[in-house]
Figure: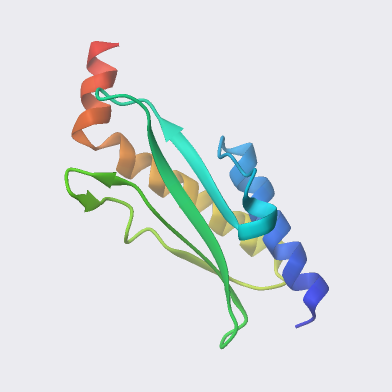
Length: 116
């Protein structure tokens, strides 16, 4: 796998996160993104990290969103072979879908939705 196709995968993931409402202002430097969710206790952020796992030449996406004393998206990780742009985009979309579903189930978000 060459560096250009790996970089293209990172760009594809970042573009997908941005299209789904994530702030990617730190993405170019750190491959990190954030998304703010409205909750009953005020805005809270989810964080996404995109890394290259060199052992398998895999783009790895994971993140955190702390609610009720735990990271509710800890198990929401996705992997794609670096250089496969379609897989990178698909896995980024799957990550976004999973994060939104998990965050929507938190008490503070459910309370905010019923109040608002």
